[in-house]
Image: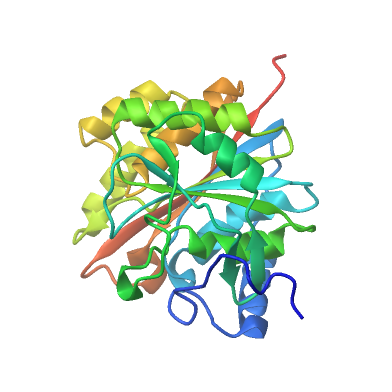
Length: 288
């Protein structure tokens, strides 16, 4: 008998769409992307990653550039902070169940840290909002990160799953402070976001230039100002801002652009809908 069979599990909603549903094929595809990703040295102590969340055929290689950094790292808990695309609710929703599931198996929720995060402020709650499976309204932006983590990390890890789309700067700052207060030195933050969305390749390049410029220093207040002024275009701008606030609390002083592209460059067609992708790392370096 499976001792976890009666637990509260968030099942995979997008297997077979955003990524392969068959475990062998999924493992093969992610492993191949990680092996092909250029390995970049991390300056100092790795605190967080910013990664895209489109279908693997589009943004997978860009995400792999970030996840390649996790090779041989002992990460205990990963806080994945993601946007809620289809469901709007006030505040921040932290998954209060026991597992998130992918075709590669179940990822155990770190209930202790999830509960500690939710205890930080009434605007952060343990909730099903943004997490439950609801057909094509199910959220993908968090789920698609998990197979990468399951394969990139050498040892099992625990998860704190966070979704929101209430991007008020004060809430992003509060969430960042909460994350910094709960996470340990062996934990990792992952902010899930795509960049430009629209019908112009040229506009995509310009917009992503501006967004990445706003990310070129760890300045969460400046990033939020750019977000409010619509200089930044990123569906996960709130999760990114929260990561930046948490990073600042953790004395992060180095942000590195690992890779950028867009769906037009991936497909070779510059006509039609275009989405921008980038991966970045945030770390703490000793000052010379």
